[in-house]
Image: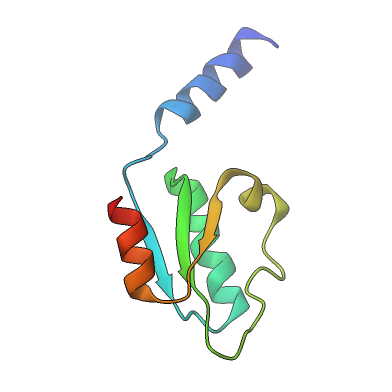
Length: 88
């Protein structure tokens, strides 16, 4: 790996935000879900918490593989459960 690439990777890793938490509650359009994940990835968010809609829409369909590689997705049955887990 050349020094320029190494410096770029090091810079990107230093901008990650492990203390920023995102909770999505019943986002019912997959393109909105994907857009939020892409923005989380760009902002350096390490994981998101998701309460899926009641109709069971597959929110992961169409999400870029690169984003799913860097942003962890935690599914919850309700907002209260998600908040309790985030507070732990």
